[in-house]
Length: 294
Image (cartoon, rainbow, N blue to C red; front, side, top):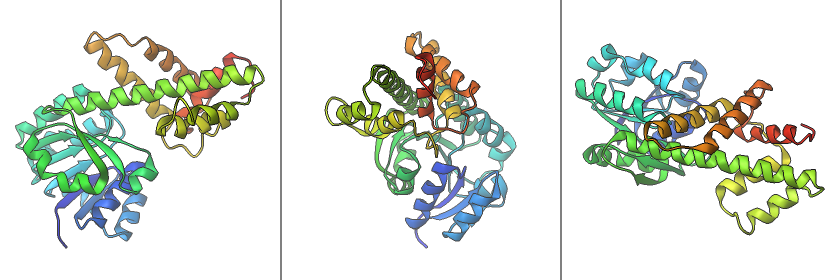
């Protein structure tokens, strides 16, 4: 076996594919997850089950892909865990707040561990194919050290600076823009359908003319066909990212007027029981407003 010893925390829809690609690239991967099933799946693909979080932090490098600030804080920002760690680098690849990144950077430094932010762009099939785009920030020497891991996980890395928080700001901005695109497509499709134009025809034209690209081509058909399951990115996660954008905007005195509209749309969708649907399900909020069937 060649390569690094990597501890991997968080084997959700994204993390499973990312960890599997590290195994395929020849790294020794020690995996841990709150539920055991994904661990068993990864062990079957060549990973090793870590002996708890302490076992993960006994690796050379820790990679984490957890769902939120709250989970990262509760599981990983534990002084006792970090003080006993052998790892010298922790690369957090989740979408978290800049404030969380600042706390994590400081706490890791107190225990002699480098901290990097490397959130990703792409849905689970892209993660499984090793074709993610990775937004990185942190100590350049540490980023250089984890280059082989980034190469196994993604097709390209985009650096945003020497402070980990900078990559998180960039990722929040991207997700905010994607949410705005979904809302605008939902409203345009509602406008079309309410006036006798099939939404699928409108989206087919748009994605082949003025709005090509993965966001419109990927989410456009989901909006037009009201196809929200299986969820590639669940509604509660979308709301979390819109809230992150609003909070980050407020911290920088940057108004985000569309952000409040989006937040209300997500809350409306959740209030109507759409928790397990893709965030494209905010389309039905626009339809309800127009009196169209949902």
